[in-house]
Image (tube, rainbow, N blue to C red; front, side, top):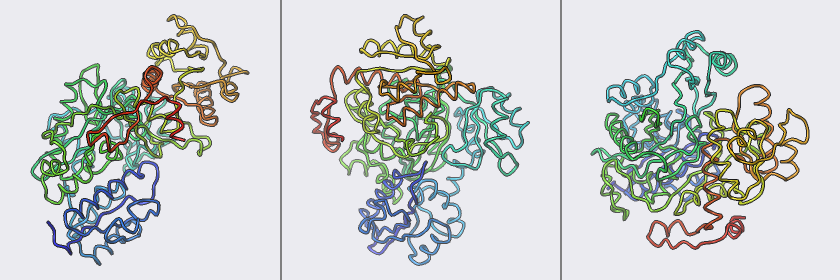
Length: 549
């Protein structure tokens, strides 16, 4: 227990922007509460007026200052704290870790040298090799011909991105040399100072991630494994995810927890860690994509879904407490090192987008993050939880009406069971010519609607006239195809028609619609869920819709 005058500085996340938003303010505030509970004074440095962390009564003292090295150093010089916490304010705060440490400022939690083991691409790759943990093949190119050579060695498709960006900006999946050279010419600067990072892209892989907290004694708490609903290739911040995992095999889950424990131990992590994985069903292998020794944007979700306030637990661990004691003090049963809590509910996180405010932006999902927030749905089944999450995100899935399907050739075989399910649920199906032909060949009756490039009346005309209730459109290649898909997706945004751009999300939507049509949905208070008084009241979708308006 600290002395009354002992002070700890917490660096916030700064202004909200894509890739770093209110989720990190949640972590900052929980860190402050944990500091105060442990008997210390909490000082926040942040400059966002629209957050709880900058409320006058959240911390013992607030410095509303820019999050620059000079300004933070001024605060540290004035306050002389026991130390500074940088792992709760997203990438902005993490970027200050090494510069502050180099100037003699005590950084609490994971040592800055150990942070570098995970943040530095080459050092992290060597760490994984030493641990015997698989990672996708990769390379670094400093000029265009070298990029082509590396991509050919790795094998297409590859994931390419500049080495100097955060949040997936300018990241893209390329399928051949022509696309790679176009990417280099249009989207990236290639030089010794700014090389391009090239990774093998695992098609059909299941992406998943963990948020964990570790103490100095080596106890690692992982509340649950989060399985992404969209396929690999969609930025983790844009992908819906679910706990507990719904399709990830049990042995893959055990491997993920084992790898998480080994990585956290090898990097001597103290506090929070986020690790992202991809499971390849073809070769039955779990690969590690990256690890970040800091808070991630999924910490609030996993905390609310499991009832374990991870940021508070991590902060108390940083201050010297052991995690089993912290968890039990909170009324929870410690599941064991690198073992998850058992859940009798399903929680779905869905990303929220603001495409209606960005004229011209294609709402298709990919490696570059576009979401501006997130919501959550909880129920006894995956379908009902997913439907709630869509409703909260402003995309209420219809229970009847007309569905338009226009999908890429590669997605046509997988869309067949989705279309069949929607037909069985009573929906009228319309499809563009190629998709309709494929569905009819598989015994699914559907009408044909023209693409934009084929004249009028076309699919955009139908959307404009209010005759479409759901759009399923996956991106295709080719100039006309891209233009048609873009027009469909932008029309759906403009006229507020729910739209889906991945097969995985279409499967989830069909399951959700079926569940809600058959059983309705249950509502209850989140606090009741975690204190054992979960007695869900079954309501109709209409009643729930009215409550949400």
